[in-house]
Length: 312
Image 1 (cartoon, rainbow, N blue to C red):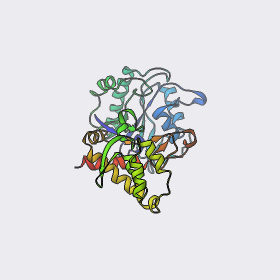
Image 2: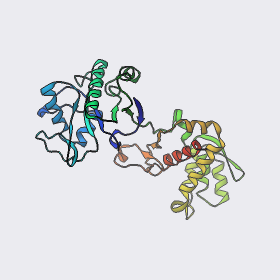
Image 3: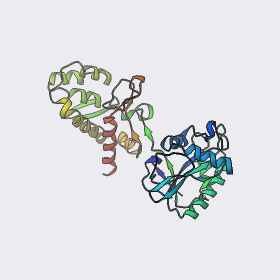
């Protein structure tokens, strides 16, 4: 059994993926698939809830193969249901972790499902099967307990997938990722008290304005001052991302403690989550911006710099 990180729906090479399910049939003879990966499957593959319900009705709450291989590729089983999802890149298998969707997942049921999945994989001669951590999110189980149950059953054909870690708040433990974090940054023989001070100052060519911003008592004041003067002409088109990358590199190069902290975030996705409508440097979470996907340029720069230091 191996562990990987990523999005199960973006896996490109696999013989099969598993979706965690329950044994309840709801309205219109469709299996209840209302949360988590089961809901994702229902949205991505219309009719899959109907197929699963037929299996549940006939045989009970077990592991089921919900796809078939045809001349055109892999598609949902042909059970009098219209599916627009032809040529699925992998087989889809139900993996029950609970009998009722309201219940907590069951370790004994997970064990049974794991054993049945192995038999199915043997029969189909699959070499790579992707399984989400069964029962660990909506099922309310602890991964350590689940791992003890399934690790003796799954061999290296089975990849247990977990979502990539996302850090979307640069506060508290991760305050060091913020441009407002106080740390000395030396640039052109001047020491700045935060990246925000330095970045705001270089929106301008005037040494007088730079000195005013340098004197700001805190980063928020530096930002306010940076929005009070007319920007240099080439700032938005050419310089702001260039300077941000340069200054982020300096910040972590010159400060060993936070450089180590940045590297320790490993492969986590860094998102400058905010509520002040900044969808250029970050991703605003307010109600007005809920339908806008932020560019997250600061987060991307931080991840780029992290990779650079990891490879040194």
